Image 1 (spheres, rainbow, N blue to C red):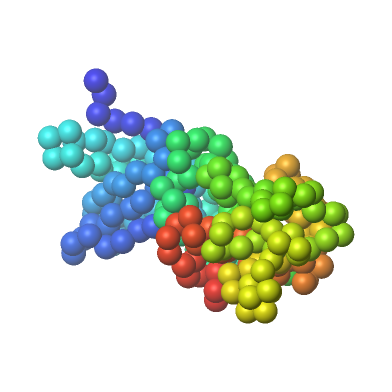
Image 2: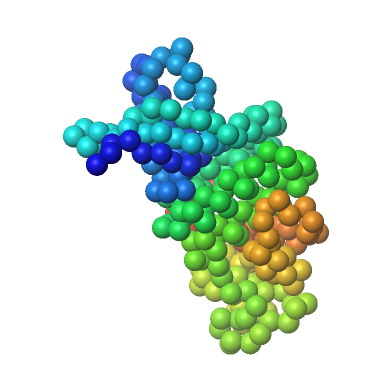
Length: 252
């Protein structure tokens, strides 16, 4: 059995390991999240190749005795320099990588999750800066779909009525369900505690972007108040799923 493996990989994270080596975390199309050690000092060409956001073909040697993986080569096909030249792109990209890592690659559908992640990162490298919030929000909702955690927003989960297209639906983070205006208690409505409104335009936008590749996101714009609503709810749902705050997103 061969101890060498080849992956289609995206670099998620690189950390120092000892004085000379580094530990790298990759998102691979074949096996999801893997960790491997990069040996060598500053003169090693692989140190510049194995860097966050870089994507390409990865060769790894597995040692079953030591239960370790060693990076033997990495052929970078996508360098994405623009992500390091813009604060907004860097923070947005870091947000995406953080979500992928925290959710262990989105479960077992690695190929689909890998394509979603790499296409979104590639779009982030070229998209206008004013469209970055829309792209990140696109990823949030499509990642929720990947995790199987999309909420039903067109029907009240309490009275089972269908919410009108022009009506605001309220998602209760405490009850983890969508409610129509009639089913929100007086106390909930007064305090707005754990309630996230989404208007009809926001719900239509969510349905549409779940059918689109990330490269098409600039064709479907949403007004600022509606975008803010779907951003806030998407962030709440993802943070609840991950069990931790999404740090970088808050800095944008």
